[in-house]
Length: 462
Image (spheres, helix red, strand yellow):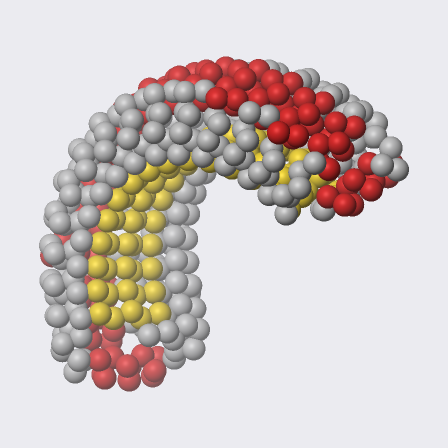
């Protein structure tokens, strides 16, 4: 039932009175997003009577007038037949307590649970929610989103409870933007008990107070059944070491999908352990490694060498944008030629001002004849003077349908003939983007963005 943005209090009151009589109702989806002047006391009272419910979804996103959800919280405890529950409260900035959510612990038949409290900036504790989760032993899927709950300083109860949920096969925890958090040790340790997990996502973006993720890293090594893993640590400027995380990944040999995001972790000086471990993950199909603005990094040799073992990869994205300490990507480039099953490849080196050569990368691309999508971002690589090898390799990529080459502000690049000749031969191309803006050593008529093959070829021939 969608009442987004239109429900007034009298509408909700009438709805609740009507619903009270639907004693056999088994599924209810109620969308009250952006209804700013609501009290949900009557909703809570109505829910208590619907004891046959098996599936319940309540969306209260951006209901800015809400100051409490105690009645809703208490009523949930009566719904002991529930198997699926989703409660969304995104943007509940006036919400200061969810203490009554301790009643969740009574829902022992729950198999799927989603709790979204993102941008509830007034919350300072989720202790009751955390403790109640430990009783939900039948849970198979759990999503807890607490992004930008900046008043939170601890999640120990949540962390400890997770260890009891041994039937979980899918878990997603988001604490992005929780700048008050300094410790996730209990969360990290509990994960090691979840041996049945197949899919795990941990989002710690912007948790600037974190300085250590050792327990998280060590626990991952016990999750031998994992098939999909995402660890997002973007903007965790307090981190200086990810050695335990790196080493643990090598044990996850059943992974087929992996994403590790470390963008903006300016305190990192080494990813050697991460790089070495990747070589053991020979079942990977999809790999994303994001290291943008990791200005403390000077070497990615181990990462580069590991890639050549991942011969089952069909989708690869490596971003080193603005890693100004990187001067050499030879190992990364050479490894690429082993990845002959690749269909989608994105390599971003924009702003790597220390790079002077991409020859090995350029040469390797010619072996990737199954590619249908290729993106190479080299914008602001002011040390580059030649892209001939990149241009020559394009000739072999006869299956390419989408090609992006960004050279904007590569002020040292002078050669474009190889690119011209090879692009002409890519007869299956459907989408083309070539950015040559402010490549000041090229003729003025080429210093533009080109978005189709004909336009680029015409300009190159002038």
